[in-house]
Length: 187
Ligand SMILES: *[C@@H]1O[C@H](CO)[C@@H](O)[C@H](O)[C@H]1NC(C)=O
Ligand SMILES: *[C@@H]1O[C@H](CO)[C@@H](O)[C@H](O)[C@H]1NC(C)=O
Ligand SMILES: *[C@@H]1O[C@H](CO)[C@@H](O)[C@H](O)[C@H]1NC(C)=O
Image (cartoon, rainbow, N blue to C red; front, side):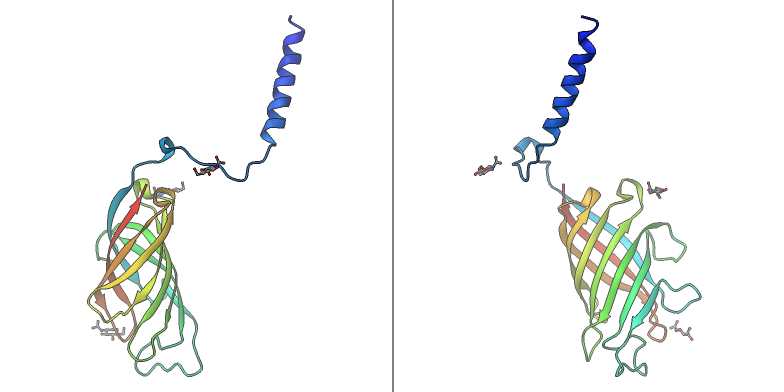
């Protein structure tokens, strides 16, 4: 018996290995594996700083016809951002995440941006989770609404919307602090 036990274990492990190798492309999950959907409201301030020794947003492309006489971000320009998200509007307020992505001036006459970004959160249980936003941002409007089209981590299966309101801005530098209220369904 003492001799057969290791052999049996070896056979068992070997068969588990073989079973593990059987590939399944898809399976249906049971209702028990589904969690209840939640609605979460997030509130934070977004700091977009173009003019400083340490800008958080940098222009990477502009069209030959883009002029700076009226706005530092003209039609056809593309900006990459890694903007701090904070609890309050002050620059030294507690950071809760970053807004990482691009925005491009996609409207010719009045300022209108195409926003493609991820909110990458670092606060508490949200640390490591992200939300993906793809939307239109007419920056001079009092409130701009952008769809939240997905997320990761806590925000898997997310969908929702983000409301942006300019808290403070400087048209000369293009710097702005924007208040965000984000509402998302997730599991
Ligand atoms: C998944 O569910 C569908 C619809 O009930 C069924 O037709 C299908 O055979 C199931 N697939 C598997 C892998 O069980
Ligand atoms: C977030 O998670 C990372 C990786 O686990 C960790 O290094 C970092 O300290 C965490 N940040 C906060 C603010 O908890
Ligand atoms: C905007 O920024 C410019 C350049 O730094 C500065 O001269 C000006 O006073 C600022 N305007 C406001 C309203 O803060």
